[in-house]
Image (cartoon, rainbow, N blue to C red):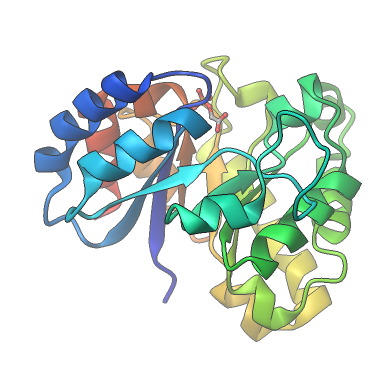
Length: 251
Ligand code: PGA
C-alpha cells in the first residue's frame, strides 16, 4: 500500500516572513489530515522560517536543489550536509526549470541524487518529456531513459528514499494538465522501467507523483489513478485553500 505524498514546490516565491504567514494559514487547515505526507519545498533562505512555523504540525519543509560535492569552491551552492544539519528531510532534484534554465542534465541529476542520499536526505526526483517529445510519440522512451540515467548506480535500498515526480514539461506552469489517463500511463511506464531495474516488488513500493498544473479542481481525478501516488504542486501550493483542497483529495 503506497502512501500519498502531496508536495508543494514554492519555486522562487515567499520571503521568510511570507512563508511564516503562509504556514500559519495552512497549518490549521491540514491539521489531522494524516493520510498523506505534506511537504513544502522552500527557497534556501526561507527554509528556516518555514520550519519554525511548521514545528509540531504535520507539515514538513524541504529544499529545491542541492549540490553534489560535499564542500569546496562552488560559489553560490548548498551541500547536502548543510541541508541535513538544519533539519531538512526532503530535496527536489532535477526539476525541469533547473534542466531548462540552469543546464541540469541527467548526469548531474544522478550526482546530486547520490550526494543527497549519502547525506541521509530523501529525494523528490523530477523527470518528464517536453511537448515536442510527446507530439513525436516518444514520451515512453524519454521518461524511460531519464529514469535509467537518473537512477544509475543507486541501490534498491537507496531507492526507498526516492520519490519520482513525473512532470510533463508542457504541463508545468502552463495551466495545461496531463489527462488522468496520460498521467497514469506515463507513471506506469516509469514504474515498469523501475521494475526492470530493481524487480516488481521494489517498483510497486515506489511513490510516483504527478506534477504539472495540478490544482484543487483536477487533483481528485489525477490522484484516483492507480499509478499516481501524489502530486508535486507549483502554482496551487502558494494558495492555502487550493493546496488544502488537494490534500483533501488525497484523504
Ligand atoms: P505547476 O508547477 O503546478 O505550477 O504547474 C509544478 C512544478 O513545477 O512542480
